[in-house]
Length: 157
Image 1 (cartoon, rainbow, N blue to C red):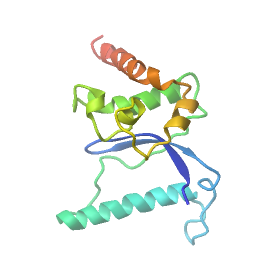
Image 2 (image 1 turned 45 degrees about the vertical axis):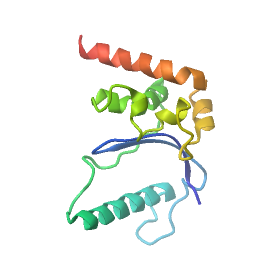
Image 3 (image 1 turned 135 degrees about the vertical axis):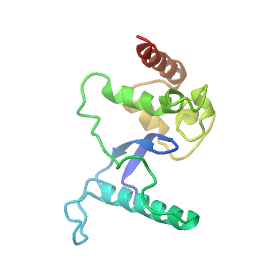
């Protein structure tokens, strides 16, 4: 059973970003022994990450972590101002800020191509994302580039 809808994502070479909206099932607590204090979404994400790491490590004959940092979660709906919207934009801006691409739409490992209509993927719930962040699909491209320009200008100050 799905525990959340994916609103946006970006896979980077050594980390990833996900913005999710969790449903009622996802916030229920596990009934497994030694996991009673863990919500089902957290438990499932941990299982996916652990399984992926183990499989990849076996495949390429290595050990240890795949990602640069431990997985962290932050509640965005408690944040003030436009923090959630800024996080949504940052997820899509990450490849350009990291100088992996010149244009955001060229990074295929993010939900940005879906939001701007270049791809019709099924991983994200685009309608829900647009509703939650109160953005029209026609605004995404310009708004994302506008907000990234502000970040790039700050780097030169």
